[in-house]
Amino acid sequence: MDAVWGRTMTDVVWIGRGGQGAFTAARLLGAAYSLRDGGGYALAFPSFGPERRGAPMKAFTKLSAGPISDRSEARSGDFSVYLDDTLLRTPASGAGKVLVNTSSTSDDPRVVSLDADGIAAEVLGSPIVNTVMLGALAALLGGFAAEDLDVGIENVLAERLWDKNKKAARKAYDAVAETLR
View 1: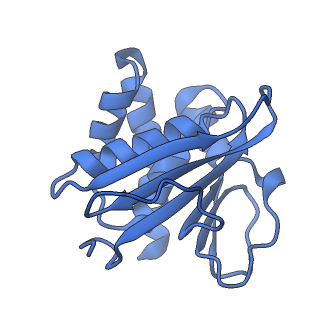
View 2: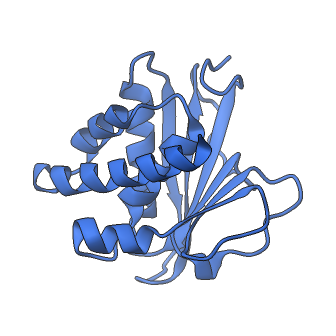
View 3: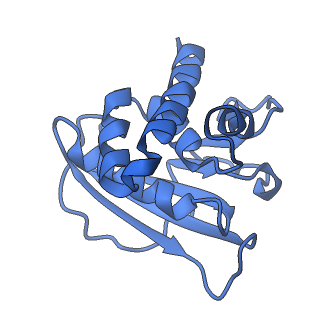
């Protein structure tokens, strides 16, 4: 049983466009989860074919306190993260929490909105929102400290990318954590 979520496994579905870093975010989450105090098991993988930059794609992260034997794609995750709001359809009944990169708000209590484009532009100087959305998701998941994300970032990204991406993730983490209080 997972001490963080009280479940045996948590599925996260990342929805974005090729080149936005959805798979990198999936890997960063897995690294942060498995390397944090208390550890755990994580599996991250993409789902795409011969798509090109800008084509819709998905990536997945599975988090568990024990070994992960289910290597299949999740139809609907406990958490769905949309790096591009144009890909969002109305969340299905019974779907888990939905995190969306948008400046709009939603009346659906399952939907959490964050202007990740704005944070990425301010902190990174580029439209790549993956670490911004990672920080926001970590706050939603609970059981993560912002420092846990730093460890994930340092283990997956090139050193030259650490500082700005840590700052972007922290800013989003703090913004979402504030709204949850």
